Image (cartoon, rainbow over all chains, first blue to last red; front, side, top):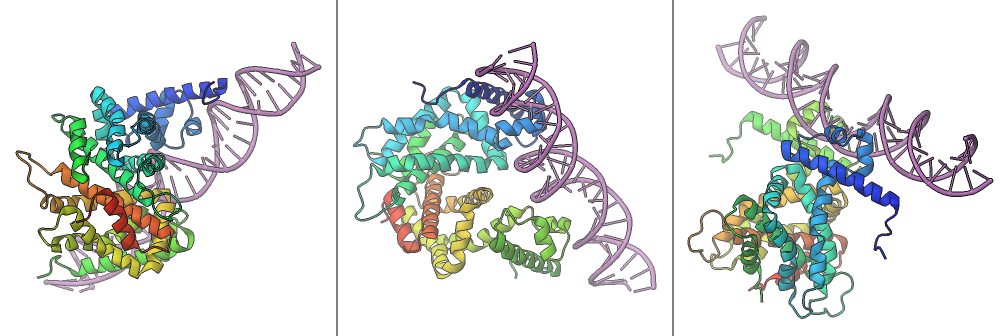
Length: 199
Length: 199
DNA sequence: GCCCGTTGTGACACTGAGTGTCAAACGCGG
DNA sequence: CCGCGTTTGACACTCAGTGTCACAACGGGC
């Protein structure tokens, strides 16, 4: 059973999205994000500007799409951490899913990462990405924290811890992108260990 | 000696900025940020659209400007924390500068805070704000951390800790804005205490 | 084969942010 | 009153994003 009931149309749509994305990233790499216009992307993908916007909500959406994809694994990884592991350590472990991929594909990850903080417009996109991760991860973190007496709703402490971990991840990623001499995983260990002890 | 050599022109410019800002915030409160156009703001301030952009780089800049202003005090507060206080505790203490102001002016702070996370465009602005605070605060935090053997440049651990603290602050602010029944300062204590012990 | 509704597409027009250019208006010292 | 530098507004332009509409492509039923 397919988890998403893949109809023919859905797959066609997916193929078009992939092609548009591919062309867009080619242009981004060559000219940068801001200097690339939607018209150029649409032309490169052989469609009208209007049609582009039927596949992606915005130019930023192209970037968000790629980042979401490359980071889906974190939630899965978090699920697979041992149940008795403390939340901070579990988050560090789950992050290994992205960290290892980034280190393995450093040649493409590093320029991407550099672009993300060189282009001011994209910083908002990164924030949006973190917002989504925060939503998925917070409940998982909350499950690992000592229950609170008489408190309804999502646990603020879990949200804060998750958000802090994401902040650490970002610092580590940014530092790593600029300085190839350190391993990303060591950097993340150092940085998360400094904020809160990793048991 | 004035720290900023306030010429007549500078003060005039400041006065205009204030007036524009005032009109803009009146409109934002009435219609929301996105629905308010630059033309409306310019008209309300009695100037042309083009002139508006000579005073503010963008519509978002109006918001950033106000947020920067209301948060300048944090850096000062950080300087005044006892030198032997551990960094996390010092950050918590320094945040009290904003927290107390927000609680004292809850009637205006709360709607502002709500607007900041209701309007998607403004989330990028908040990120930019945090980026600036991070820049100013990181060196101060680094000064409170055990020196590292043979490591040049700004301390990554200090950046991570500062960024995490800002993440906590944001979670606390957002929660507080939506739920008037808890004190912001208690919320921040709880949240920062959960991430790392507050000595 | 033809007719049908659904869906994808392009053309056009429009709003709104932001920028460059230029000429007119303003303010002030001489 | 004159000149000089600054401020301003008008105009034109680019680019993102949206609404509307007419048309082409497709697939099924007859």
